[in-house]
Image 1 (cartoon, rainbow, N blue to C red):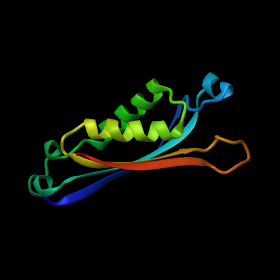
Image 2: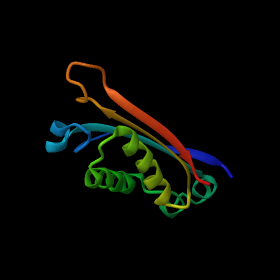
Image 3: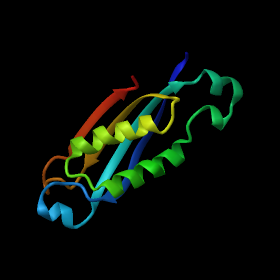
Image 4: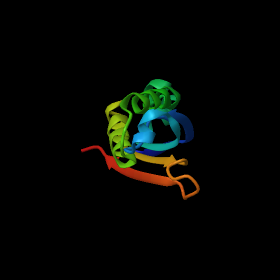
Length: 120
């Protein structure tokens, strides 16, 4: 196995995210970053998309998943998104997810959470 990493950074979009009443009423910006670890042996030899994951398609799927879920807690969003990514392809051995919520506390530091999950 030749483990490689694919990273998508700064995927920005609007979503319902938060537990407070005002956070449930309108979308707010979030920034999503994720990395995937998978075996690069076949793709390095064949140079074929079928031997890897289409990260552009996956980014759109993750965006839809988060927007449809309307999470209350950033920690839950991160954990479930990592599990969602692992479920998208048996090629993905591990997933790391980092989320930033820039408007979490007006005038305060950005709220973030991250997790790395490995396939059992």
